[in-house]
Length: 178
Length: 265
Image (cartoon, rainbow over all chains, first blue to last red; front, side):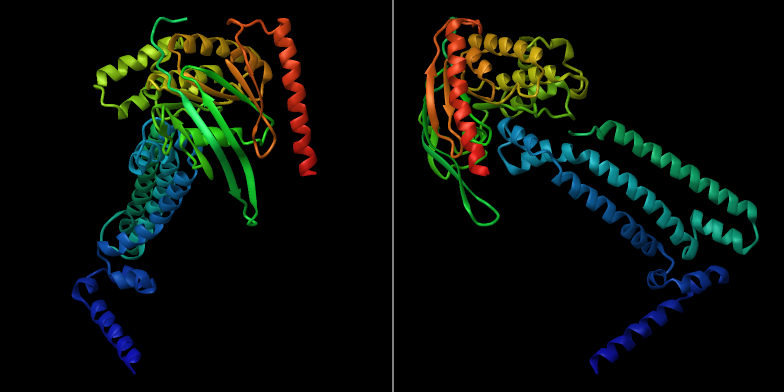
């Protein structure tokens, strides 16, 4: 049956991939983590797995808040835009819809940053050979509490700084459109 | 009156009707048929019970909405789309909160082929016209309701329209601000002489402002009666003739409002 053959082929490819020397060279400890998480297993320990996880974690909050922002534009502002010279849909979009939706988009970015940041650390904890998450995971493996603590503090401080940046964006571009 | 030539254009509305399809598939006649001739530079005020289709009428004149039947034209040119030539003042101000006061007034000028510097000076000039020149760099959120509507008036006049459409522009303001802005609007209109179509619920406002008052019937809105006013401005609303007119219009409106309520019950 073709479907069985396909499944077999996929399994073979996965096996080949998981015996790739580059992957086996990782520390034995975190290999246990990464084998337990299927998604990471598929993507290996390179950048692509992390990119995928961050994408899943950030894409939808941004998409949904952008849609909500664009749909929530006060119709009277659209009328005002049309009266005052936005004769094409594109110019109405650029001059009214985008700036009116911006507060919502910035909120989406801020939320997405939170989930994205958490996701990338989690990805590094289970399947990576660099990064703050890996630093913690590795510190746990080799009983380096100082390394673990530094990783935790750095994650907190960086997260706070990024959020401060997004709050700045919100204050400047997030003026609530009534 | 001003020596400047009239820059308003005549507005002609003929056999205009609007029918909506409701969600249940029924057809609701909202407006008309309505035929109105507005002379160039005339201040026309339309009064009617709520739901009589006067906002629909204005939306059609602005070009936001197509009539079901009939049409409207400005100096012979049919209205199909919104245009800078038909400026509008909205009840809810409809200012762009992400722009400064000056940028709001300048918004409509950006699509005209005028150099940036000149746009700025035209916008400033119009802010001066409404007495807000010192607020040019303020954000919209910092203004009171009356000031917002003054910015909207400046924005509407800045694009040099021949027709001004006003949809209950002072409806959301307190009585004092309202009186002040009525005076301001008259002053600017007398200076510029644009054709104005002004919609309101307030009979006294209509008497204070209008060259001609149209009273609309309840749905589907049609012209019930019209009055021409030629008493000089500023008008004393306590003068006998105005008092009489007010009573007359109110009794007609009361009739129409009663109809609305007996229909819906």
